[in-house]
Length: 134
Image (tube, rainbow, N blue to C red; front, side, top):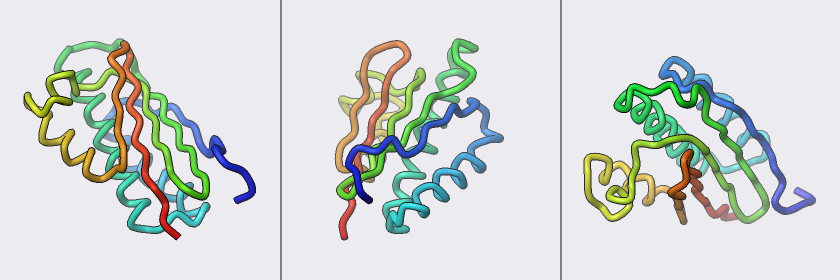
């Protein structure tokens, strides 16, 4: 790649379980097109799927139609893949502290990525950074 911090791919994803499979396939194809290693691609796709599932879960639990779509962006450069998703998530401050019903899920997500953050905004911004190794 000739540049760093390329906004590689951005999409709006309907918050419906029925679109998760096609979303995973699209992201896999995009990452594969930029020679992202299969193991790293699988981790990015799994974390994205988990974040979208959290957003769908929040919507169902809160019985809200505040957002019908999540915003998702992938940035790829020679050193890393950065996944960003913006929506309402079922993850809370308690989750980030390792407590509550989604704490285990958050710990697993944190284990797949090199760094994860979640803003407290409404909607929140979830970011996961994955280092690429040559």
